[in-house]
Image 1: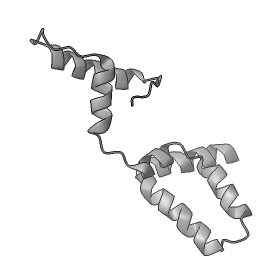
Image 2: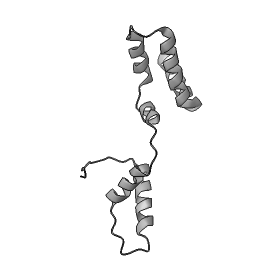
Image 3: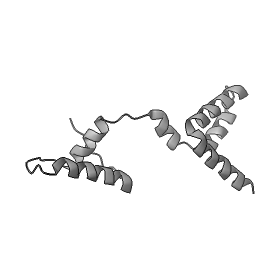
Length: 106
């Protein structure tokens, strides 16, 4: 059974889909292919890291506030959770976060 789903792609994502589509049909006039076919195969052949998806769509300040409100967590567990997120973020994102916090304080 197939499901119908409307998806909004960023310009760079669509460029990648379009490039793959054009490459697949180039020189092969008998190939019956549409964008949905290309996107389906791209999804099925990709390796998705759930941690990366969560991180991209997580508000670190809200996360910290939620962790601080929980009574069942110790300070060490909260620090460990935030350190884990910081480790996943990497240096570049951590610098952006710290810079944003510094600007908010001024």
